[in-house]
Image (cartoon, rainbow, N blue to C red; front, side, top):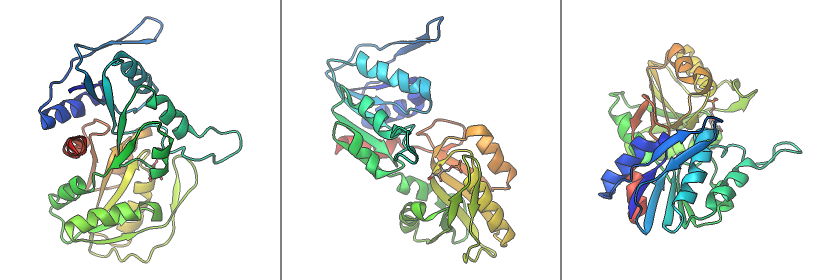
Length: 281
Ligand code: R5P
């Protein structure tokens, strides 16, 4: 087996190869003058571990091309961040079930799929190859332990994220709770007044995705007004759209961290170890 990665997952792909002690295939990427993408892989093995987050439309097309380039080799696709997973329902008439459309497209030519903290488990059923989701809760707990907080409260911004926060808290033996969020628009949310006693506490808000930062900025403001000593943010997928990272920094978060499912300077912990363990299973 050899490891292949697309451009936006080159650091994570390299770490996965190292963790599994597998050769990494160097691939070349470029665009034609009209904007169409081109790639060329090196020499493949009869089994390929393809590591590729679809962080934008360009990386999605690159992944489709890479799957095709790997034809003839049995592909295990690691999809650390799956774009379009949040449109997991038809919220209004006439909309696509985008997560299903993408899952189906990415299944062609692939034998096995591994996702990381996918937004909704139901999305896994749309793949047309065996698919499993792994969690970075242990890695995030390790990161939180390194922050030097005093008995941190692990807080989910809404009920949907409560189970993930509880899992992280379980690893550290910390207290956990959740807020109640209503989404007003793509960038704005309302957080209901909470019974969480923030006074004098170090609080770490955890979520699967930070996109615009609207959710966590609103929650952090409320917690600081409530007397929190410090508020940190930790997520799996740091999208940081529309200046999301700066929005959180400006909101007074003590730290903002994400994994490398989306590679950035905020990537404080890696998904590589958990991915390697899942591949070995
Ligand atoms: C939504 O259900 C997700 O779990 C995140 O809470 C959401 O994507 C965060 O978005 P934003 O950072 O734009 O508030």
